[in-house]
Image 1 (cartoon, rainbow, N blue to C red):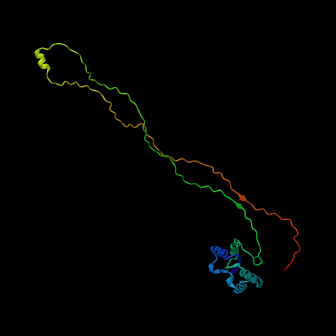
Image 2 (cartoon, rainbow, N blue to C red; image 1 turned 30 degrees about the horizontal axis):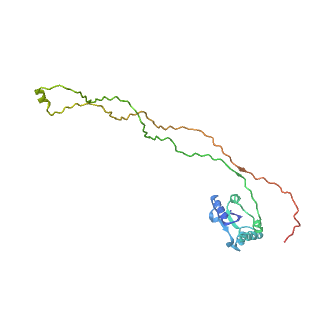
Length: 229
């Protein structure tokens, strides 16, 4: 046997969310109807057909005309539909018609979640070339040609005189050493990079906040006589 369950919400968005939640609970979408201002007078008749008394049906119809949205569901197990509806912010037709003002405060608590993020780092080998002045002593052998002149004063014989007046060139060479520079590259060392995996444990500390709601009773005070419209 199908039973009818109704719930009054403040707007269409909440009503659509409730319809989806009822469908997830196993209630067929065709068995869930949303009524808004467009329902008009037919809503009162519809609610009376679903078993509501005329007075309650009229209140719900007026609340819908005031801007509320009504969700009506037919289910074999009404308790299941009621459980889903009670998860939503339902209101009564009296509260909506009277413009009841509700103040709410929420209890809020932060939770600390610690995850891991991969960071890439390491070491890089960078070669650089530097120049410096070096000195190295070397012994060089060098010969010099010296000119030595001496004064002579003696008489030549006719034969010697004949040989003396002849053109000739006399040479004497000397050797000397000059420094010759050469460079040789030699390996003096090597730097290697190796990677090894290590595990480390780190304790993460942070501050979380919590907001509690306490209920306090406000002392009564007189504000004047009560009047009814």
